[in-house]
Amino acid sequence: MKSKMSGMHSNWSEMFPTKVSALIFVTYMGLFINQGILVTASQSSTSEYNYNTVTVVLLTEVLKLFVSIALYCKDASFPSLLYEVKKYSRVMMLYFVPAFMYCLYNNLAFVNLATYDPTTYYLLLQFRVVITGVVFQVLFKKQLSCKQWISLLLLTLGCMIKHIDIGNAGHEATKGTDKVAESSFSREISTLFILVQTVCSCFAGVYNEFLLKGEGAQVNIYVQNVFMYIDSIICNAGVLMVQGNLQEAFQPDALAAVLRPTVLLIMLNNAAIGIITSFFLKNLNSIVKTFASALELMFTAVFCWLLFGIPIHLSTVLAIAVVSYSVMIYSQNPVVNQTPTSTSAQSLKEPLIKEPLIKEPLIKDLEEV
Image 1 (tube, helix red, strand yellow):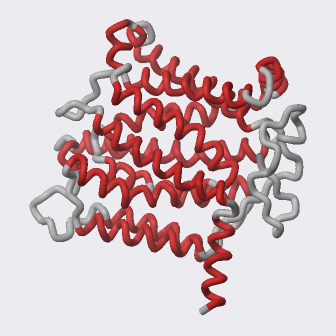
Image 2: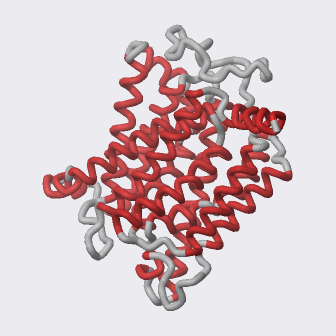
Image 3: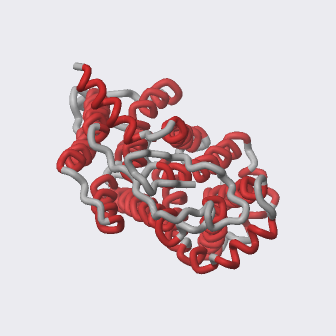
């Protein structure tokens, strides 16, 4: 019994090497739960938005940019930031890839949350787990074990169970089903949007991790955030331009609609998500990030029932149970991060973080900033 307990403790220690990494995990999960609920609360009675959602995404990226600059300048100087931007301009260009994917992801989030309730929305997004596993193996050349693949497949199965009508015949399982138009064309479009968002989430997350630990390993994390948000602002401005709404989006009436309390909370919460995600990927990995998203399901279902009266059916309970079990299986054999021997702190005259956040004696060259 003691050996099993010590083994379980060891596995969780590998999954969350420090208290900081565990705190990042919990914070990340809580912020994402808030986001789905806040976006749903900002909708009208007909599930439409009375504000320009692309403008909200763009202003959120501006807010993230200012936060990242402030965090950098807390321990360094603004001229040194400009120097870093110029020095690593090639890395900044590479960030246009995940920035464009996150641009699509963030804008499609508003579209899909107008179609599906938050619980169904988050469940559908979980189909990214298998894609994430494959890409994780290809980019980082790290083979997932049989137990890890079983846990990923169980997670996908849990997502599928959610859409089985168990014990509620004659009733739609989710608010989202009520919202989707009757025509097959509308259903196909809704499915396509979810698929695009899922692919964007997967590849942007893994590619961003690749930059954080590969091409951009020598670049300070706050500088990498600056690269991401500048590129994201440009991408969202491009979306407004394509829509023909670039000038209208910043008219007084349009800005007044965006500056409502609920919408401001969405931007603040989303900005916090952007900051915490970079720390998440730096200290954990995309696979653990996927399971953080899975654990959001049970809490989202409960809060949506309490706040919006969205029922929790038997299929929802079974889906959450399967997802939770898959998390338990995964925790027995988590992916452990490996990083290059050189660190961003060593490449800066003014290191922002004096000590590594992860110090595992089993991995001699592990030091992350």
